[in-house]
Image 1 (tube, rainbow, N blue to C red):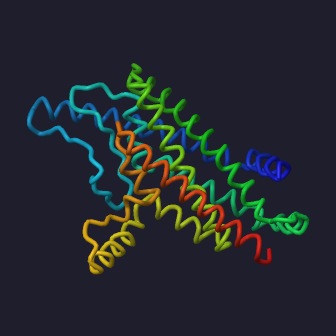
Image 2 (image 1 turned 30 degrees about the horizontal axis):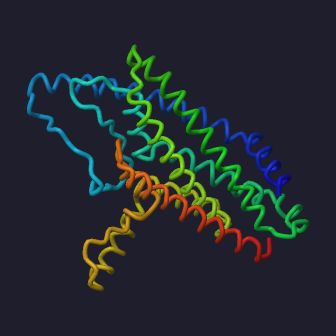
Image 3 (image 1 turned 120 degrees about the horizontal axis):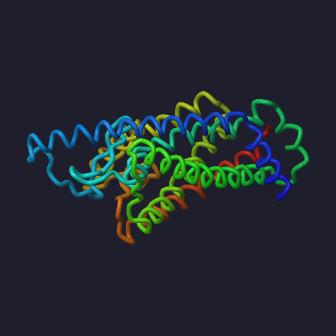
Length: 284
């Protein structure tokens, strides 16, 4: 098992996409931060002309999730944009997740498409361990990417705004840790889809759809079916990984953290066990 993990980690760090996606993520972070400077200046100009144009909005667990990628910072007029505001906007909008799921699909299918898996699959007593080793590698990738993004975002904030305000560090650390677990669960879901379908194209489309909230159409259909069965007020998106990523508040309660972590752990374990069982039994 340890050798499998070492092999996947070595393969992950040797993949060109690991570095290419990281470079694109850094460039995109600088670009979106520079755009937020324009939005911030425009917002302040509008508030000077019409002080009533902005009303204070309070985030709630019932905040609707719209189709597409919606990256907005929660900064109020007159306040300085902080690094935490940028982190919240990008993670809440699943902007960073888009880069991560693309790599997860490429990494999960790389040994399948090359045929290398056939060379080592027959030597394994339990091929499910290959899935577990991929999951371990993706956990390290998730943690490193989140750390890398935080460093890049901090640098972009200082360069684009000319000053640096981090925001409440304790809240940011708790929010970032919770979102890291949710992002990791999403990567495991994409890995499972890639391993089960063996289709890089389908897996990539599925991963992008998840980040674009396209799956909310399916969730809405399930909600209507459940409502017809006599259960009112059920909202499926509140019990999904991508739903919790979008609905997690900037300063959630302990219950909000626990709910998000439980969903991340349950989905992560479920898809890993499922893909491991299927991978173990079928012919590779």
